[in-house]
Structure formats: C-alpha cells, structure tokens
Length: 120
Image (cartoon, rainbow, N blue to C red; front, side):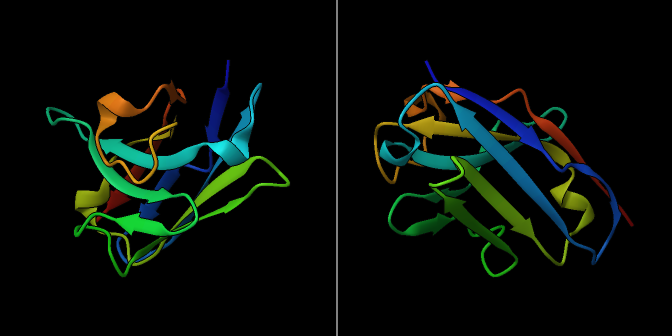
C-alpha cells in the first residue's frame, strides 16, 4: 500500500510562487504515474499536472506550473509560479498504475491534501 504525504502549501500573494512536495512510501514509486489535482470550494476535483516519463498539464496551469519527480527520493513536486487567486484550492497528489491519465477515478493512491491560498 502506497502512502502519500503532501507539504508546502500556504498563503501567497498573487504573482508569487510556491513549491509543493509529495513524499511516497510503501510501494514502488517509480512504477507509478503521479499527478497533482486540486479542489476549490464548491467545485469538483480537477487534474492539474501529471508525470511519468513525460509530463502532462491542464490548460489552466500550463506555462505556470511545473511537475517533476525524484525517484531516488520517492518524491514528486509541483512548482507553481505566477499564482492567481483562482489557483486557491486544496492540492492533492495521487498515484496511478495507468500512465498519462488525467481522470481522478483511475488514481488508486491519494494524499491528504495541502491548502494553497492566493490573495489578490
């Protein structure tokens, strides 16, 4: 069973940056496709970025967010630049055995989430 723990959320002003981290344990991290999702109040959880051997981004974050992973550290990161108030959400990392999927139901492992708040 894979456990995922996110960190790095917080409060930041619009235009600022944050880096989220997600540490994995209990499984073979390199075999998993890793994604970052987010959920704003009253909205559905949405895909933000994913990484296997290549990366995949939602249009809403493309060019501002970068996902990368360090398999030696069993950690995936999300570097978020040029943050906007509409990026405010709880951010979740997730792991899937289905590569390049952006569909939440195909992710088997989820972290507890970390709050990101962007003030205007």
